[in-house]
Image (spheres, helix red, strand yellow):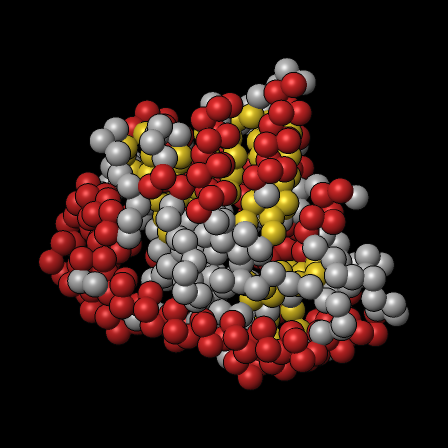
Length: 412
């Protein structure tokens, strides 16, 4: 009785793991949940009370699909203060989290068999959203300086040489999820040169650039470097204020935003009005900036604890790119004989959860990798969890063959 497309609704490994670990004494290194200690609960409660008390008629009413006008204006100012370039022909739409933005982009941009380019690895929920529109997905590996734009160039030559074209390039250039790496300024510029040469839209997903822990890292958005209006910029308050508010956005050419607005009308009419007003006041009063600074300090400590524990406990020749930002470490075990999907039940039985890395690879690789989150667990649990995983991995690996890097999967 169900539509055939319903078969494409693949359960997210992260969401399934959250269900498995809920209410159990398991050290979860799986989901990308913020540390609740960073939530400004008292301030948000005060803002919510004021918003309902003073703006009740507006905040509890329907709103325009693109978002509350006052909030959209404040949001544009916020982005400009964060060095995101807003062009004269740009507009912004408020979405129900950035996940809705990915879903809308999939529906608006992709037709069956269109070619799209993503990174190897990439955000698994983006892959799930794009897959529903039946594209051909081409993966380009990352290294410690972000997407390998030299390989991107080779792939574009191949694709266009076959008489095809690319609909868009999806990238997380700063504090990548899951790899934690950041695209160098030289590669950012060359990516845009390639996009211009082949007339390709660039979808820039930017949830984590507020959390960069190393000095000297270039965090310039592609949107700011773009002189042609081809970058569509996605953002969210989920990691920098609260995921429960479900506030995301898309900034781009007004024509693209207009089409996304029409698509959103059929999805949910509009993002909740109340949370938009709460977000508006949180930005206006400096609460978002304050929360970012607090969280950044907390997450840097946790990241360092995880990196030290990996060094101490993981098998010899295990490899991971050092995350300059974000909330994750992508770990590659030094044997292609290890399947982290099959290893996961044993890890859960020992009290630790992680996300098997294969979910993040559009080319079917990554089976010996795992994504580990450091933002949610306390530092002592991070170290304990890595110790348990390291012991389990050593049992599975008889003879290290590493180091294994993402590039290896591209050529296999």
